[in-house]
Image (cartoon, rainbow, N blue to C red; front, top):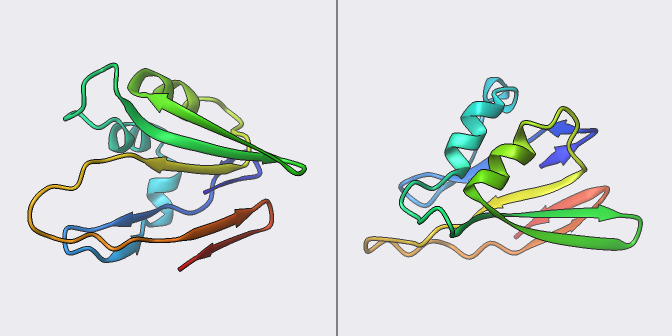
Length: 110
């Protein structure tokens, strides 16, 4: 979650399917974030993340490739929004479906 030009919250699903929140120290490490979002199992031409931003009442969805996620995360000021990693589930674990309703002032996860 990006607010005031910087990452403020980072949620992820662990190997047991639990939704967790990364610690504050990881939020300031943009190189670490880029590495986590750059799915090495995907081809270089594949999309690795979506970036959803909102300005006023207009939403913009960008699909980012590996090189683009690195560029976006290394900007000094980021537009407010959400960056979500794209991945293909593997194994026998059934990942939970999370519904997210987002606006510039609120993120509601169900």
